[in-house]
Length: 273
Image (cartoon, rainbow, N blue to C red; front, side, top):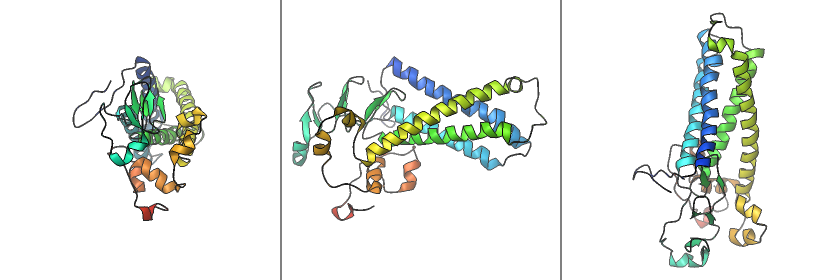
C-alpha cells in the first residue's frame, strides 16, 4: 500500500512485522542519541574536558543516520505504475511479470510482501519495512554508512568514558544516570557492537554487488540472467556509484535530504566520471 501527499510522495508498506523491525532500529538509535550525550558528551563538555566540535559532530552524525532511516523507509523504491509507458526503442528490454501480469523492465522483480514489481530490486529489507530498489538504493547505502559511523562513534565514547576522560566532579551521585551509569554504558556498547558488525557486513555486500552490477536477488538466483541482463562493458566505480546516487557530485552522495534523478552518461564519458 502506498500513501502520501503530492509534495512528499511518501511510500508506506502496510506490514506489522516490518513496523516492528523499524521500531527496533529506531529504539536503538534513540537510546544512543539520548543516553550517550547525557552520560558522556554533555557532562564532560560542561566541565571543559572535550571540545564543542565533538558534541556537534555526534549530533550531526545522529541526525544524518535518522534522516537516512526515514528516507529509506518512506521513499518509493521504484514501483512500476499500473499502466507504464514503454518507449518503442526499449520494448525489447521489457518482459511480462507472471505474478501481476504487468509489463516491466528486465532486472525488475515482483515483491511478494509489497505486492508489486520494483525496478532493479535488490531485496526487501524488513529493517526499513521497504524494498531496496533503483530509486532508494542510494538511501539504503547511506543508512548503512551512517549507522556504522554512529556505532563506531558511540563505541569510542563508551571506551573513553572509563579509560580516557577525566572523572566528573559535579555529577549528582544520587541521580538515576549516575547510579545506573555502568549498566547504561554496557547496553550502549552491546548495541554499538551489534550494529557496527551487522551494518559493516551488509555495507560490504551491498558495495560488492553494486560494483559488480549484480543485485542480491540475482546472486541468489543461480542463473545466467546476470550476464545477459547486465550488458555492456564493465563500468568504472565512479560511474557505477554516480548512477546509483543520481549525481556525479560526490559530496551529494552523503546527503539524504535531496531528490534523485536517473543519471545517464554521454558515450564519450562512459570510461570515466
